[in-house]
Length: 326
Image 1 (spheres, rainbow, N blue to C red):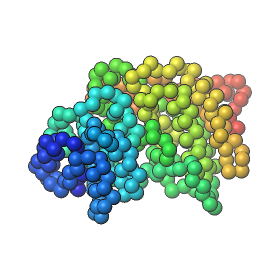
Image 2: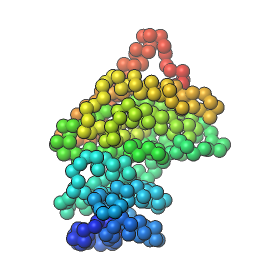
Image 3: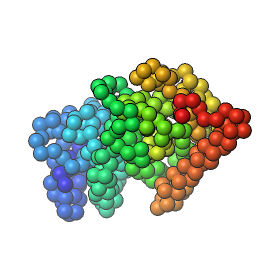
Image 4: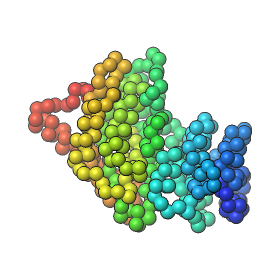
């Protein structure tokens, strides 16, 4: 692996060089500022396999550097691990929203940082195939139901910083402190009729639908620390940390109100009737080894239960399925 480490503290850079060298990762380039790192990224012809960025640096900080690195075509999917002594949650969430894959807190454990970098590299190789969709990019001669990805695939959306990959969302949740867990809630969203949307939309229309739903949830929850991931199959996972959870089930009603007012339309001008079922929030499991899977599975179960309840209510009221889903 070729590594680029960026930290304004030369002692940390020396330590990283020794640590990675001992772990059979000796090919490391060091930079003492974000500006210097950007120059290296743009001029290096071979490319780096992983970036290790300090968050707190004079001038351009690591979060801005992370965001700028993601704009470089060769680094849109490269693992980026943040190094930080910052304990404020807002900095960590901002780093993930800027494109970070994982983070390690200083003072770091030698085995932990090398293990997390290797895991991040392996996971990035499997998630590179996750498509990045752009709801604003017009598609010429696009066919409905013809996509370069399966309905089960996670996707990313341009212009949606708070929507990150499931792997990164899991990394974020796994490292929350006990105190942070006490102020954290996790919930899942089931997009109703996702199979119909997938079959009846062009890729751009599909991106528009997902973007409208994410926008609505972000506005309703209204918290800067909200992070989300699209798992595929119409499932969104969300983590809100450091604030009182929104009122349930009012959040679902407010989301639908925004979706009804939204601008999600097909290319022929027909409105998309987008519907969601939002599960009740749950606290994360405290056991770090089981936290991610058990928490996410339970949150998804809540959303699926809500979906079944909504379907039964529509049937009882004789409303059937929403017109836009059929």
